[in-house]
Structure formats: structure tokens, C-alpha cells
Image: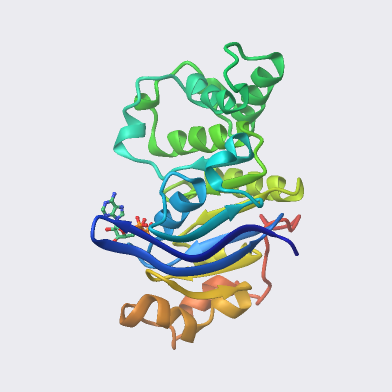
Length: 265
Ligand SMILES: Nc1ncnc2c1ncn2[C@@H]1O[C@H](COP(=O)(O)OP(=O)(O)OP(=O)(O)O)[C@@H](O)[C@H]1O
């Protein structure tokens, strides 16, 4: 499988603090990679480095063979919800439409194709009826669907999603997981962060971070007690009782993957 995202010797710092160090990764093209790890382990920081928003203090990052900054419309980044994007004084349609300006390259007016991409993304995330509402008036789950719609509207080859399903109700989670399936089927590369090991289990590839890469591989290689214990330290309990991994593997031992047609059943 060819590599979509390559990192070698990557260190990212905030002032004197090292958030990520010595990261070597090759993430597969056309696949879903889940980034897991405890709070503060560097998941969002890694997405920042891949998106080009954060400049590594050392090492190199290449996305689709080039530096992330030059990618523009080939890379979409859906950040974690924050106070600042909650308070943006813009409507839902405006937020999703912003995605298309990445395609405009200086042209002022949106084309019919742009407007269609915006409409399509809003329909997929079921936020059409909210089009004229201000972002600040939405619930957290509605806002999250809008941010994902903005990412989808870019029609990018690489989609970065920071905790896309955290705090969402089940139908909203399913909507987003389904969209991830569709993007994967279309050959897109998806890199997402999650705290839910069941979501990680559905991915093709899992990376466990703890300020550095603890493990990277298939879910079967990474989502095992010894490796998880190493990543989460002594704070992870109950593994020996098996309840955590029972949840991950499902009660019948059947593993669902992103892209499985029956994954919702
Ligand atoms: N803007 C910032 N300035 C200073 N330190 C930061 C900044 N952003 C993150 N950090 C620090 O970098 C480290 C990694 O943070 P990061 O947000 O990447 O972790 P995370 O794995 O995404 O965490 P979470 O699961 O809580 O979202 C943490 O120690 C954090 O405190």
C-alpha cells in the first residue's frame, strides 16, 4: 500500500515544551488511520503538523509527496470544537462555503460546482435546515456536523478529523462514521483522533501516541492489553477483567471495519 502521510524524526514544541518527539510514521493511502492516546499525548499536535498549521522544530512531514502547506485543496482539516469556532459570527452555510475558497485560488466568485459541493456536504451531514442559523446558536452536536460538512465540502484527497464523534448522540456518530466509509470507498485517506477504542478497532491502521509513537499497526497489533498499558500507563485498569477489550471486539468477537457494509447493524 502506498504512503499518503510520511513523518520522520518529527519533533513539535510549544515554547520549551516538547509535545511530540521522534515521530516516524508512514500512513497508508486510501485507508482510515485512528490516532489514540491519553489526554495531552500529542494527537491534535500531530494533526496540526500534518495540516501544516504547526511547523515542526525538527524532522520532515510529507503529505501526498509534498510539504503540507502547499497542498491547499488536497487536504481538509476539521479541528476539534473550541470556544473560538463556537463564537464565529457566521451562518452554517457561510462556514461550509468557506471550504470552497480553498479551491478558488484568488477567484472571487463561487461556481455552480462550488455551490453544489456545499449543498451536498450540508445534506450529507443533515444540516440543511440549519443553513441560516448562526454557529453560536447551535448545539454542540449540530456544530460538529457543520464542521465535518465543511471538511467534506472541500472534496480533499486527505481528510484530517480531530475527535469527530466525541460527545455526539448515536445517530450523529453514525452519520459521521458513514461519511468516513464513503470517503474511504472513494479512495480518500482519513486520519482521525478518537478516545473510543471501538472506533479505533474499525480503522485500518492505528497509531498509539504518548508524546512519541508507542505503537503503530493494525488494530489487532495495537489494541492489545500490553501495548495499551504501555501507552496509557498505570492509569488503565480493568484490562485483565477483559471488559474494555470485550467492548472493542464486540460480544460475538466479530470485528467491524470502516467500509464494511453492515457496520451499523
Ligand atoms: N497551544 C499550546 N501551547 C502550549 N502547549 C500546548 C498547546 N497545545 C497543546 N499543548 C501541549 O502539548 C501537549 C499535547 O497536546 P495535544 O493537544 O496535542 O494532545 P491531545 O493528545 O490531542 O490531547 P486531548 O486528548 O486532551 O485532546 C500537551 O501537553 C499540551 O498541554
